[in-house]
Length: 86
Image (cartoon, rainbow, N blue to C red; front, side, top):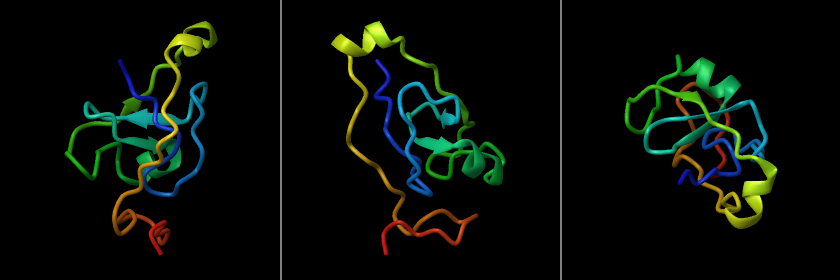
């Protein structure tokens, strides 16, 4: 089951479970649409492609909630001046 991470690993913007702006790779690394586009839809962690994350229906979230653990890329993302770790 997908983890549904709550944020972009680069810019730390919130990406709630119903967001259509969330993209993921096969390892569930999660990025917003803006950061994904800047990275040419290629995951900076595994080099895999980034695709739109599916939306889990609200009724399914009751028994299978989204993650609350925020993941941030160490050192920020190469395409951005944003460094969430500073």
